[in-house]
Image (cartoon, rainbow, N blue to C red):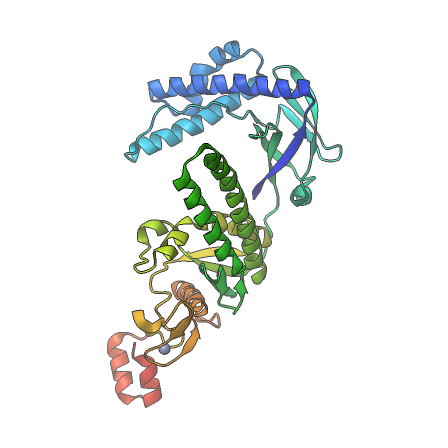
Length: 397
Ligand SMILES: [Zn+2]
């Protein structure tokens, strides 16, 4: 599996200028290739290469061959995605970039983890740039490297996004299945009776939302400046929460286990919060996509699988008897079954249902044994006639 490690470059002013010039030529070539591909409706990499390589090599004299090839690779990706969107009926135009980060394939750069230096090809020739490795990435140091992109962040700093390859842990799959109910009052509840994340997150979200709304309705110049600043702050807060929560969830499962989530893709379209618009608003703004992407990569590193199930009825069904009714859920947190009287925290009940749903889809019971599904309905009715009352109850759906 592959990971992207972000290394902060420490270029001298001349090196920073060389990087900026390289990016400028790279961007120019990228836009040229895209324009050609767009006009010719060409998205085949080989044909684009033959059509554009020599002209771009001549136009951008500072770029080494491999960078010119990477221009075409990036342009091909952009054209393919643009044509795919066009085919899907979406409005598209020719891909264009104002600052396309140069991509270094394995050849035009050499990275030394020990010396913390990277040797890069630029329009000003090859140069050795110092970098610093952030704390989180120290565990990736020393791994074989793949491609790298040189990016300049809005604050002017230069970063190298390096793709590293690490071994996938070989964990034999176990029967452990943990259902996860994602929510707002409790960020995550697992079928293993764990309540993860912090309740305070919801209040912070609410405060930040109210502040944003006040500033938006104000509309002065300083309010707009303030808005820009808190937007980034807000995004950082969420990323932090999602990192924490995904780590806690990954830790909840042992290697070889399975974490099961509700499939919350397109939640905005499917969501039906009829009464409380506040819930609806928070639901719509929470970044489930970011959380699941963090969770997926963290779980993969530990040898844990992440699966998804259909979210329908998981909060209405009784995890003890299977009875489903909308009014089983009495309040935000209280679940009482109308049929059997089973009472549990509502999110915990939902988490258990999610785990059960996954097991049912895999055809295994909670102990991991295969479900007996061999009895056909006529046989079942005969069995029912001769069965004791307890067995008869089990047989009825
Ligand atoms: Zn029940």
